[in-house]
Length: 337
Ligand code: ASP
Image 1 (cartoon, rainbow, N blue to C red):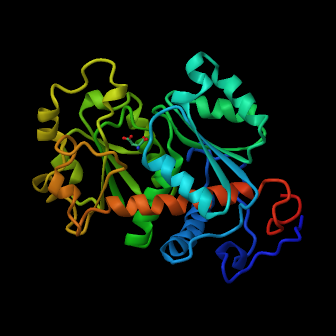
Image 2 (image 1 turned 45 degrees about the horizontal axis):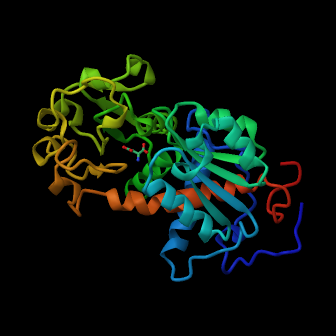
């Protein structure tokens, strides 16, 4: 497949690299991705970090393509980040707000998918409150689909941006000891990170009260702790999670004050981690609930803003690699793929 529009290697980092193919049409989760798949996504993202730090950020690899951001659940970071990513690659990006859509009038997820499909988008980014909804939708449309977070199931681009942040700081993921702390039960971020970190050779500890751990936690290839001090001992990375109260059906913690006392990250608990341990949080943060505000803002330890920066680069990489499966890709994909 070739196109008459030649890419310019001087302005387009993708054009200067050999053709690579991501062997999946959709990005629905980290589960099922191989270590080389993940490494490819991260290597590709690294190029976009450099591009995003340059004065001229725009390139044209997705020119003429349409991306629809279909968000059934609220989002600040993820939606903005995908929008910016698509625009920096030259695509037309449409944000579909569910509050003003026919979904509110009773249209089913599948009807919405079929309606959008008729508008010929090239890529759909979907966030939905139900686990599995994005995979279902992907079966009904003709374009590539990226999971922007489905229920408490997966949030693959979050795990990828976390991995990119860690890899750029620590050089590699292999052999690192990573603690994921807090509301594991409701967290798609935790699930995607566990799959990714295990696949890339890191060791994962989950630290949470028993009420906020899924019953199958022990089968995830992780170590489980209920005590922050023990769990944080000698870790390289401290990944804090938000208490996802919107998904609580019942009382999972006695009070947020008590939760902070036992599970909130403060300097006393952090002192058990390695002295150069990084502090991470996917956002939005509940300051004073799962993380002390000073710790969150500690410029020497916290990489929370860097995670947001990496998010744009990772989403550019995901969009671009999936777009390589689209018809009339400009010729960098080998024939037959
Ligand atoms: N932003 C992340 C998510 O969408 C984490 C969170 O909301 O707590 O899952």
